[in-house]
Amino acid sequence: MRYAIITDHVVLNLYGERIYRQYKNEGKDVALLSFPAGEAFKTRSVKENLENQLLSLGYIRDTTIVALGGGVVIDLVGFLASTFCRGVPLILMPTTVVGMVDASIGGKTGVNGPGGKNMIGTFYNAAQTVIDYNFLHTLPEKEWFNGRVEMLKAALVWDRDFFENFSTFSDFQAIQRSRTIKEAIVSQDPYDRGVRRLLNLGHTFAHALEVLSHYRISHGEAVAFGVVFDARISYEMGVLSKDDFSQIQNVFPPIFLDFSCEEMLQKMRLDKKNSNNLLHCILLQKIGLATQSVVPENVIKRVLDDTRLCAGKNIQVG
Ligand SMILES: NC(=O)c1ccc[n+]([C@@H]2O[C@H](COP(=O)([O-])OP(=O)(O)OC[C@H]3O[C@@H](n4cnc5c(N)ncnc54)[C@H](O)[C@@H]3O)[C@@H](O)[C@H]2O)c1
Ligand SMILES: [Zn+2]
Image 1 (cartoon, rainbow, N blue to C red):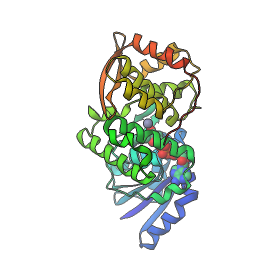
Image 2 (image 1 turned 60 degrees about the horizontal axis):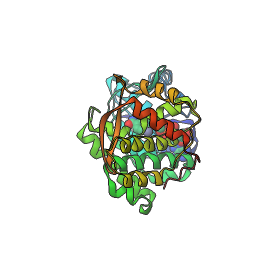
Image 3 (image 1 turned 180 degrees about the vertical axis):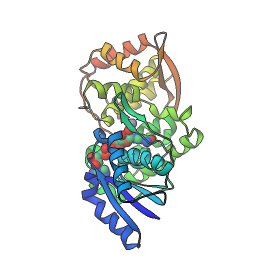
Image 4 (image 1 turned 90 degrees about the horizontal axis):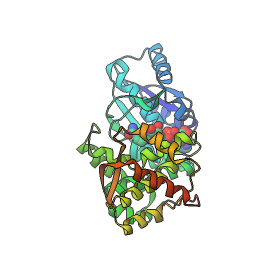
């Protein structure tokens, strides 16, 4: 068996040599490949370039691919492993919180297309996932923030106790608990046809915000806003109690948005199929219990209007 470790340039500088040596010291035939860091490089052409490098190094079916990095590396390299010689074994070594609690669980792989994120990809499960918290010592605070927001979002849809006691969990306990939540959800719905979609809480709003801000607002920030937005919709629809809504707002305080409601609505319409002025949303029935539902556009508009009136962009998570 030959091994190919694939990572991005940031993780290469931090951990590439160490992991490469680890494989070498075990007597393994191994190569180390990399590509530039960031969402902008999660593309077909980067994947193709890596495939060409593997082929020119003589890699064939007896290859195991090791994805070392955050969600971008996991998605792209997972996709590569799923198509290289019709699929070769994949080992995941997530190095970000998002990688550990989200991208490394459930087998979704992919790259971005001209029309949007993750448009081209496969479902492909890893043969092995290595969780090593030591990677997180170098993780910048903003990446921790992104990770905490996704952990809280998972808690909101599935695990009330975790949400309410989030601050009492150590980072590592929280990561462990979040992994358990995602594993439970994807085991019920591996192909994202039902319950797994609940993990999209806050994400329709978040994607609209990311696009309108030209990605100046990070994914984690956008999801934090999106979660409050969906909670507010749930409250307005009479599904979520005022108490639970307030609890959520206390974790993700209100924001001021500098976009017109019509712009936001247009982008949100693109994200989810809409028919007869209804948008598909994830609603919260209570903290720890979510459901899918259609929501009339006039409710969305009203909440968008109100959201824009809230001042003070100050998110404190964890
Ligand atoms: N497949 C899935 O189910 C799934 C789930 C969630 C997210 N994702 C995808 O994951 C991506 C986001 O993942 P992410 O938040 O990990 O972003 P990322 O992979 O871009 O990593 C963020 C930044 O941190 C750097 N980095 C990684 N590990 C580091 C470390 N240990 N120390 C210092 N810096 C480090 C990276 O080089 C990068 O610059 C998105 O593309 C998203 O679509 C996929
Ligand atoms: Zn997300």
